[in-house]
Length: 248
Image 1 (cartoon, one colour):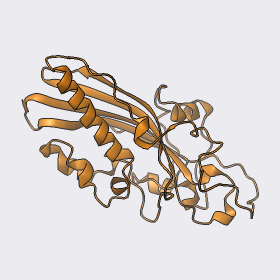
Image 2 (image 1 turned 180 degrees about the vertical axis):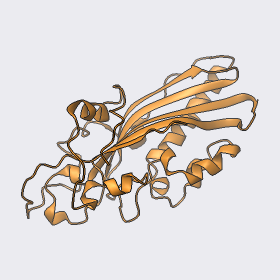
Image 3 (image 1 turned 135 degrees about the vertical axis):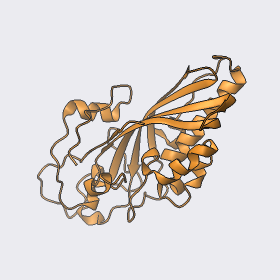
Image 4 (image 1 turned 90 degrees about the vertical axis):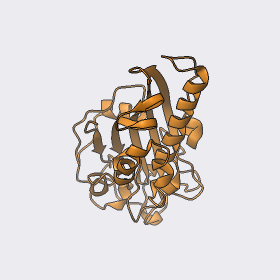
């Protein structure tokens, strides 16, 4: 598993704070680049299954469904996001990998203590899933998505724009599926193989620990502006991952 966690702070122009709230908390994504993304799990769509590398169509469909449900748990389920029941995610993987999933905040979106998502506002999602043959008895499932989270503001009266309470996670996740025979150290089922993620518009102090909190969690932005090319890559998972050099 490679080191892949990168973070960029939100760009904040040096403007005076307004005393009038400028964000509709019932529709926080309105007017932003993520407004047109799908709501929640509707944004995670598995490709059509076909026989592949000794797996039947039904077996490939099962592998894709397992990977999709695991990604939904890892990036959307509030119980996993807030860490109240990470077993919901870990139990979907082969037994030898469950302790790793429980221990690592990097295999899921882990929301920092003290931050909460806006009630009733779905996570916005865009991206793709693909499947290919690996070694004999192995399917490789690649998932490349961007997720946008809307947080409860700490002080609504001083908000100057929606990106103070919206954080975006660009995440690439690769799972292996082993269903034809037991693999040493893996057994049968789903296992995490590789991951890379990039935070945008967030608290740097949380991000350096692997956790997500919105930009309004910090009074001072310690980083510089995000290059335009990296910003495009954050919001468009069909493009390569952003520049790996973080500013946090």
